Image (cartoon, rainbow, N blue to C red; front, top):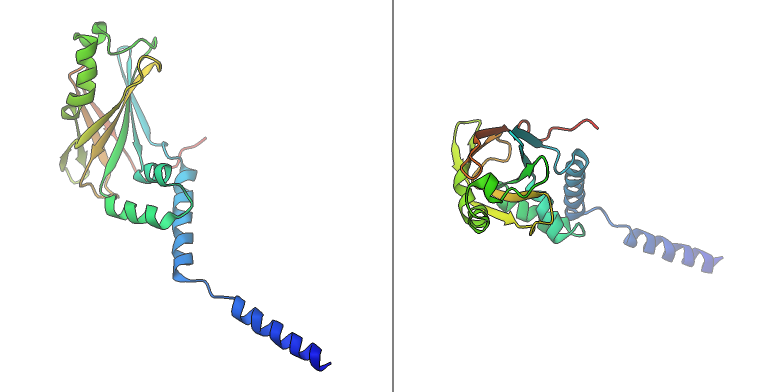
Length: 200
């Protein structure tokens, strides 16, 4: 009986020692995981706006910066991802796609009026001057960079990533595109609420 009591006491002590309280880091990790799960549930690319001029569709999609951070760093440890987001939360990334109705290559001379090589150069190095953002506070923010995702005539569209800096993460924005490449005029894309849920 004494041995059984000793064994019970030892097991009880081990049980008390092994049960630890939830740490601040566990709570923070859980909060971050919930926040990113809700973003994913809403849809990373749910805020896409399309305008069509003649036979060309212009699609602007605001993608949260967390999407690219998670894509690059993974979902195992979210604390570094959240730290990077906090350091860069005033950045905005907009995915902008050009697509012709009949899926022709838009960089051909018939659409741009310039040679194919010059059109590729313009998409790579000159397109940033055509875009700017106007915030709800009427601030004008120039495009700080463009990444042209060249597809070598495989995909039926042309896509660029537009980068803007110094915008409050809760600020509503309007993207302005002054089209000098296809000569279709000025296009405006009004991005509404920061977390608009789409109906499926």
